Length: 394
Image 1: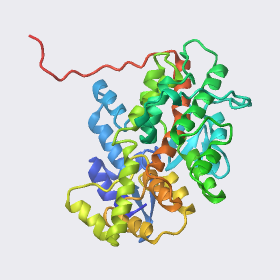
Image 2: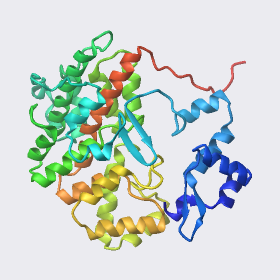
Image 3: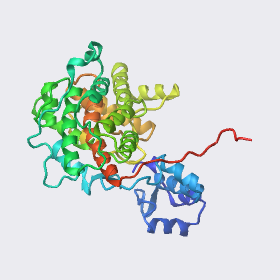
Image 4: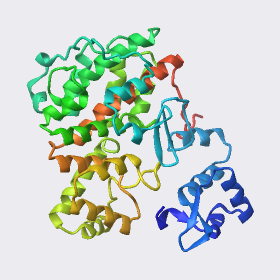
């Protein structure tokens, strides 16, 4: 942990307004993680993020409204799921470490895992889905891939049947057909039975090493629990709608600047640092303007985003990129997240603009479908209540 992410015992107890004994009790219950103090191994340092989360829970108390609100803001779990776990700075797909899976698996392999297909391969002998390019208005031919996909997908027959009361195996076939249609829409190609990373490599003219980096990237981005786009897809799935509708909802959420837009902001940061030739000055200038530093830090990974760590270690050397990482760590005390890794991947492989978001959308479609399938099996509508804070009627 960096010094900015840990507290000594006195500071941790003071923040929580508890005694040292109570602090130690929290640690023994696994509520606060610790590590040895490098300056004195006999002392322990306490994870600041855990202290902050515990303090927030204490202040919230047991009021139902506060608990419900917290569930929608990086808080307590809002829905039960068996798909993905983020814990201890690691990402797990159905109990398997995603970083380990990414060493060799393809996105198709992870699809079978996340969709809980067992020995059944939903991609085997799958007929090519329809992608209605002929009826797409001409301006969309040059539109960004996300917008092109959002326009085409609702017009495709892939995954277009309602999920309600249908067998899981048949839904998985619909999902596989839909995934192939998504790849075609994003790349501007025809649906293909080749592995998805191979299709991407062919479209972007990558060599074997580049194709392997794309493969690992797709695996690492396949799911990430209940982020905004996944929650949107899951809400739509709770109505019994089609998988196509669920993915369309996910794409709509991903198009927002606070979600998928983070990758584009990371690309701008890298370009700015390249132009100035001075990474620390670039960071300082942004902070003086009152801007945040995009693509650094992650609420679920206070120490290091394992997806970013995996990819950045495997990219070619880049002195400017490394200088920017060092500058943000020194000035802000935050490590790069996966959005920065995607922008760095695009830079390293000389990919088309917006390629990072394309990889994100293609990969995350697998997760959206996984959550849609899981939610459909619940046969329960997601319908939270609002806490009214407006003018009261007389």
